[in-house]
Length: 511
Ligand code: HEM
Image (cartoon, rainbow, N blue to C red; front, side, top):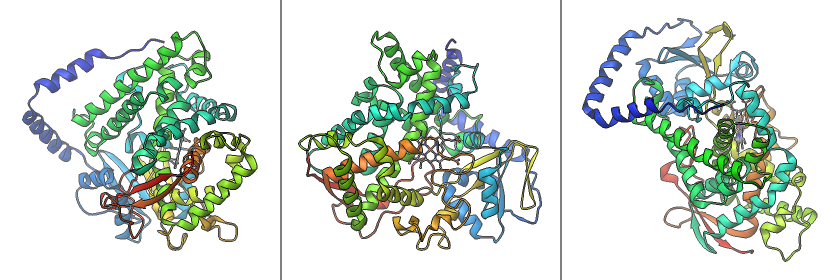
C-alpha cells in the first residue's frame, strides 16, 4: 500500500503561517469565537439528578483541559449529586461518581474508550493527521493488539532481557560514580530507550542522539495538545501545527529505521524485522511502534520515578525490596558471581521476575495508586445509556475521576501515606468496593502492557537499589521533610509540582 502524504496541504499551511500577520489571526479567531459562543445552544437536560455548575460552558471546558483534576473534584465537592454536566464545544460530557456508575463505566460494552481518549485526551499520534495510510484491509485496533502480543511474547522478552539490562547499565554509568540526577528525566529516558529496543530495533535504541530526537518529538506531540487545539479544532493554532509537524517528523524518523532494516540482508529478531517478515507495509509498522512507545513510555517512566522517590522516603520499604532482590538473586541468578551486576541480573529468568517479587509488586501497586488519579473518558455508542436514571445519549461522553477511589479515606485509610502493605491478605483495601483499584484500568479495558511495564519498572529499580546508595534531596541538596506532591492536573505525566522538585543523590557501590 502506498504512503500518501498530502504535501499540498502542508505547503499551503506553511505559507499561511509565514504570510499571515499574527494580529489578523487573533482578530479572526476572536470573531469566530464570538460567533460560536452565540451559535451553540447547549441542550441541558434539566434532570434534577444532575448538578449544573454555574458559569460559562467555555470556562468549564477550558478547566477540564487545563486543570482536570481540580475541576472534576472541586465541582463534585460543591454538590451531593452523583452527576454533573458540562459541554466541550457542542458535545455534552457527564461527570459521574459512585460505585454503580463506576461499574457501568468499566464494564458497559457500548462505551468506546478509543473515542473517549481521542476526543478528550488527544495526545496519541495518528498517521491520519498527516494523511499517511496504514493497511486499510485490517481493523487497526485488532491488528494493533495482535502485534502488541508479538512484541510482548515471553520468548522474545526473555531474549531481550540482557540487552535491556545493558541499556540500564550504560545509561546510569554515564551519569558517573556519584552525583545527583532528576529521576523524572533519567528514569523516563531509560524507559524510553528500553521501549524503543523492544518495539523497534537495536540501531535506534543504541543511538543516544536518535533516542534524544525521538524523546523530543514525543514532547512536541504532548505540547501539541492544548485546550485551545481541542476546543477550537478549526483554528490553525501553533500547537495544532506543532502536533502535525511532530507526527510527520515521527513518521519520517521511524520510517527510516524500517527502511534500514528492509535493506539489511541479515535478519534480526528485532520487532521491525518480525513485522517485515509478516509482510506488513511501512506505515503499519511505524503505527505499531509509535503507539507502543506512546502507550508504554508515559505511564511507565513517571511511575518508576515515583517508586524510586517513595522508596527514598520510606527506608523500611527500601530495605524490604533490597532483601527481596538479594534473595531473588541468590535463588535464581545463574551467572558467575564476579560478573558485573547487570549480567548477573540478566541471568534471573523472566518467570522469577514475574512471580517471585511480592514486595516489589506491592511497591509498584501502591506507587500507581498514589500517581494515577486522572479521569479516563468514554463515548456512548448505543442510542443511549441510562445511569441511575440519568440518560446519556449516543455521541455524548462520560468521564470518571479515579481519585474518587484512589484517594478516598473510606477505601484507603490515610490515602496520601505510602503503604504497600494495604494490599496484603487480611487488609486488602483494594477490594473494599467494586473496581476501587484502577491504576491498570479495569473491566473491558485492562492495560494491555501491564506485564512489560512491571518488568521494566522492576529491572530499573533492581539496578538502582542493588548498584547504588541513594537519597532523595531537594534542589539545594537538603533532605526534604516530606514526599513531593503530585501535579494531578498533568494528564500526561503527573510529576511533582514545581515547588516540590526532587533529585536523587547517588553513589555507585557495585560494578
Ligand atoms: C506503569 C505503566 C502503565 C500504566 C500505569 C498503564 C495504565 C493503563 C490504564 C489505566 C489503562 C486503561 C485506560 C482507560 O481505562 O481508559 C491502560 C490501557 C492500555 N495500556 Fe497501559 N499502562 C502502563 C503501561 C503500558 C505499556 C508499557 C503498554 C504497551 C507496551 C501499555 C498499553 C496499553 C494499551 C494498548 C491500553 C488500551 C487497552 C484497551 O484498549 O483495551 N500500557 N493502561
